[in-house]
Length: 113
Image 1 (cartoon, rainbow, N blue to C red):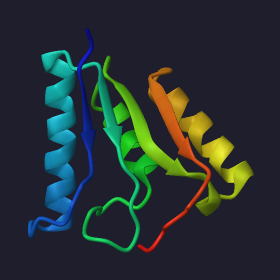
Image 2 (cartoon, rainbow, N blue to C red):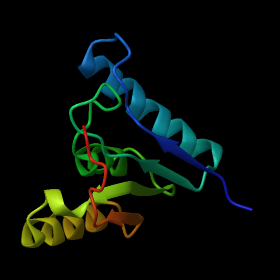
Image 3 (spheres, rainbow, N blue to C red):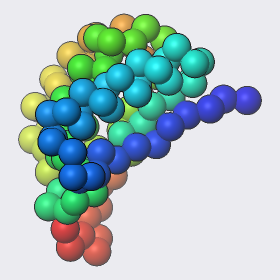
């Protein structure tokens, strides 16, 4: 059995920089406690996320963890230039030592954010 965390860094009233640091400390803790995955959502124009590009936070988390797999739920493909995304994901996978799990969505059906 494996255990993972699905997260969205929602606006909580804490200063954004402080909240991001707290979240990174939580990912470090999940790594130490033996969780298998940390998956981050992508939301835009909503208080559900202070992290419109989950790849940025996952890159930081990759440098503060050693075993937990890191991924997206989901990367919204229509919002990215294909070449830029491939390059960005490749660097993120290298930074994480091959621990990246990329979730992708191709449709923005019902997208109202």
